[in-house]
Length: 324
Image (cartoon, rainbow, N blue to C red):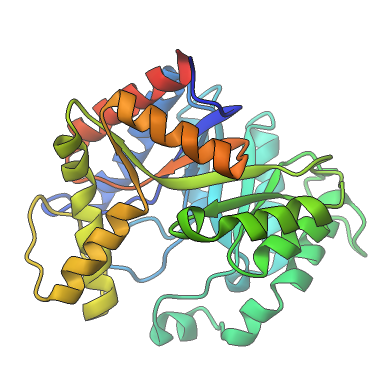
């Protein structure tokens, strides 16, 4: 039987790989999106990171436009645009433009994270108070998209573009009040997601964008011929994340890497524990259990890999699971 979701999608953070240029990294994102379209995935999303040595994806609206121009049927979106870094009117105009040019294939995923370092936050002219006003900025953006703002954003969208909130903490409550879909990911999915999801569903207010609660579960997933091979696929990103938390920078993905401390080793295991990986049967069982526990409507598969051929094979295995 197929995976118990109404849709399975991919999120690509445009992570660089040791020995490849950033231009090659971005081209690989487009090629992966084209493959995702052929395989029947529902959505393909790109993300926003600034000043990160190991990530080439800094301009999600621009990268989404390139992906849209290279595809014809798959939905393409942002996972997400970090609203504290941008003026709501500009984000609304970008979203409406992408939707108009693509025949309505664009999804607008929004987050409230700030820049990774103080230097990045200074360059973006953002501070902690910007994240605190996320709810107000979101309401302003929705007014522009919905045509109820004091000025009319062009092109007009009339609430047609699906809007999602990448939720952490109070983001779940903001999404519920605004009547938007919510994307929940990371370790929270495995630890304490149920109270937040219950609260979201109970307090959801129907809107022009969504008439009922909609939950997307986002997590790293890898499928391979053996459990060990699937784990190996996720290791480069897990090591890079450990380095970012201990040494202050996120390096390009590489086949092997040295962990300098027990803390880094623990962080790698923590990342892997919050992922789903294994053979097709093992992954199917884990994802079915996850959906039964969370009631998630959709699955958004994240996670980067150094080995592009193994990543392509994992995508193919996952698409087969979603279709069977």
